Length: 211
Ligand code: GRF
Image (cartoon, rainbow, N blue to C red; front, side):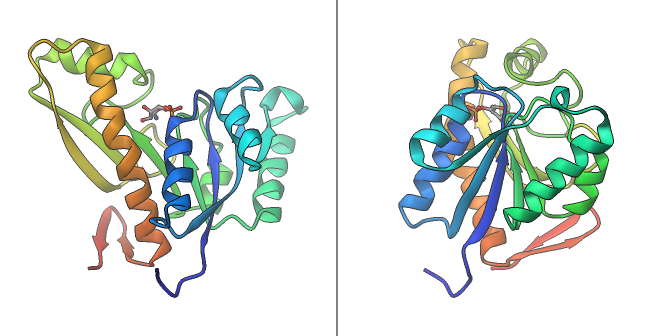
């Protein structure tokens, strides 16, 4: 496929894990030159941890509650990421704010996926059905997906890839979410493959994608 060594991904997720499953499928298909080194979840009963275990992917339940203070928690995550030799951290429905120290350590090497066209319909509290409800309440004709770098804000990092998804007149939050999710399942792997093939050049907020 290419001469690059497979990118080592570590995914952070809290829920069902359909994006992680789609990425795993693209890797199996040979469309994405990466390995999922581990999945980390704050939620011990999440579908994503179950999926990882079924697939033989290392699965860690790591929650702030298991530690005495922020520093111990952050030290532990950083140690796990170092031991896993993570190249790229991918957030896929991770419902906790990533600590600043970890974001800094993985500056320009941490991605998130958001189910709308940022900077619209992003920020604190804008997740899951709240996003799609807000898009429909506004009367938008298009929504979409954004894959972006993670910085210290909520959904404020520079976009790597964005794609539009049409809104239909009879959409409900559920029907729109399903159409958006389909696009999420391809665009996240595409964005990761850009990193795997070293085609992303980052200058502040300005991201150039090499052909
Ligand atoms: C996705 O809609 C993603 O955009 C958002 O959280 C959701 C996670 O879904 N950040 P899943 O757990 O990958 O199915």
